[in-house]
Length: 394
Ligand code: GLU
Image 1 (cartoon, protein in one colour):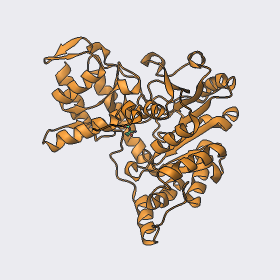
Image 2 (tube, protein in one colour):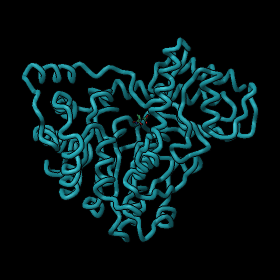
Image 3 (tube, protein in one colour):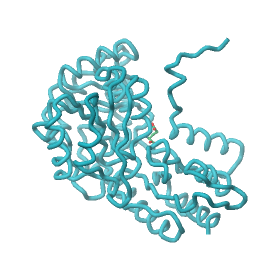
Image 4 (cartoon, helix red, strand yellow):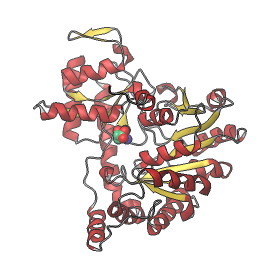
């Protein structure tokens, strides 16, 4: 008898990865699928980073690394935090992991007890809720809509806090909405949290550099929040290094130490070559990756203008990241080309079947009226995808 644990049975599949796998499978069957599902830059890793990796191989970096990462890398990350975020961290406050996803899982595992409450301003990235489930915590969504540019208010935050609240996730620029919180908005939320000293904050800043003008503000830069905030970042999105799997945290030293302990029993130190290459990446001036950000910016404008021509796909203007997150609830209850659409998953499957375009349903992001389209795809693909969507809907 195949008897899996309750833990894995409770865990939902990652919708982003599942949709990407489905698109890949259909493509392999010969279908002309355009995948706007996965949030993954379509650029190559810049040559100066690849060169650093090749150099590391030739220099025989092949042994186990310290569990929390090479000291040289942690020092480079501290320089980056100072330069980009005005955050002072020392290497004992930094842990390097196998992607920001592992960084987040470490933090959840070391902070949460079964039955603790986790606050998730919605929409939120699919794995925040799943990782909370894995940690046997309860997650509480704080809803937001296009009308407020998908931002939560201090009043909403305070109303969601319970005696069991232990952790809140912030993510700016946000996946999936592209929303960027301003410094004053973050300070207003911090004022509420100041009254609740037992709540910790995970600030996921992985899209920091994919930003179209709104200055990035790190939550831990608020002095009263510094000792309670874990800042998560990585190189996947900004440096087109998704497959290299490097994420990291800056955190109070006691949390960093616990994450290292956790990681020491699960994965050990992450890949040695990727770590060496990441020293070069995080030390590089941001100007070296600006060409990718400029390109994403153009694509955002293209997708927004094409969406305007499609009925019932109202979107906010994303200020960062590389997703648009239109509200498609206009289609709920309608039957199109013989398919009845009752929810966002139906709509997403409809687009896959009838337009050959892969998207991700908003349900897994805590926003059941929306779908996510990633515009980390070529201009040609984006134009064709939006043309197909328009054709099947209009
Ligand atoms: N974070 C990206 C996304 O949301 C990559 C897939 C994942 O890990 O969820 O699409």
